[in-house]
Length: 179
Image: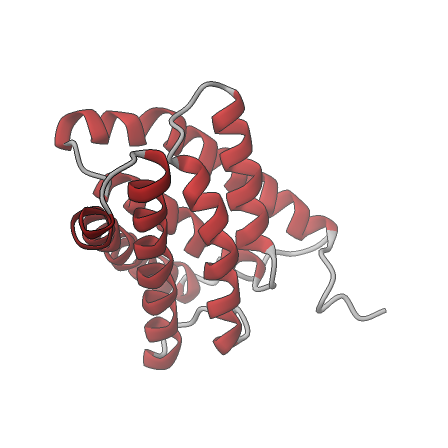
């Protein structure tokens, strides 16, 4: 049986682990960074750091979407910040953009470029959605200020995650042995 397109038990375990990471970071660290900076940059960093690691670990379409949707739903239901829902929506876009390199995050320039593009575009859209629909800000503020600061967070999240992925690949961590 070919499991290239289906989630294996190992993939589901990894999605669960990264969903838990998403929940912890978005429930505790993201509100703290927002209280300190009053900007969505920290939230973008945490979200796309987690999504890139989840994508790298599984290498399958749908893993990032699952992490974003599961994590955001639990954070929201636990009383977390409402803007986390915009990142759930854009995790679907993130997953779709990463289809350009078949969800294989490697240390090659093309792969890294697609990863940064996916994080940047998804973060910007999440910022605009948050600005318009959640914060009720004017359109021009949402597409320039809020979208721009969230875009910066997405790029910084990729800038943090991609070197970590490179180090993990060199260390051979990706080769998880199945039972």
